[in-house]
Image (cartoon, rainbow, N blue to C red):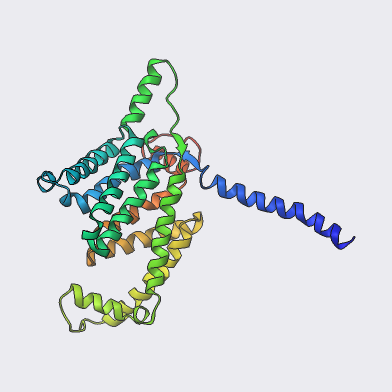
Length: 299
């Protein structure tokens, strides 16, 4: 066989491989579909995380003298409330996302770098929810759709829908873990020195902790955090590693919540773990909790 013939035989095989990879990417991103219950849970709980961080800045007595800020406050509370109950869901999620982005652009210069970053971190999952059909489950929209179907003598509408926005949320979680671990991959962190500074800053003492094992605990916490964050950045995407990683991840965030001022990020990251769980599996798990037989057997 000539070299030219070998090349001709290799081209179709290579093209087929590229096509299969492209099909896999499309099926697992923009064409990703499944039960919308997991996305609905994120939709219901996420406004409370946002409010816990920013509601104090949008109370009406603080905004009544500024028409633009008052408009932001209305969108902030009304959009969030409609997200929670799931009424006009796609519109309410869009209102919340637009309000947060406009507020960030309008007041961003007053927030400072840390608060601005918190604002963007909270805004991104709302945008991700906009690209899901999260109103098809656990919502007033769902209840109204079921009533209409019942009145027409039809079966209830399916809870399946587009979930590709969950991929955006999952990528945000991945990037936060990866770059957080990357930032900690230096001599000071791995030697436990930055952990020691946390102790001095938040517990009000420049004296080294005198209790036994303090040095070993701070050092192991520093190294363990880096290793776990790198593992979570990759492993949450795959079923088998996810079974072993989600609990250490939750415990890590709870420890930050207890020992450090990491309130918003704790609940945000834990809630967004749902973005990695296949929609049908989340659906079946909820069915099992309610004593129903899973519809797809995925649980």
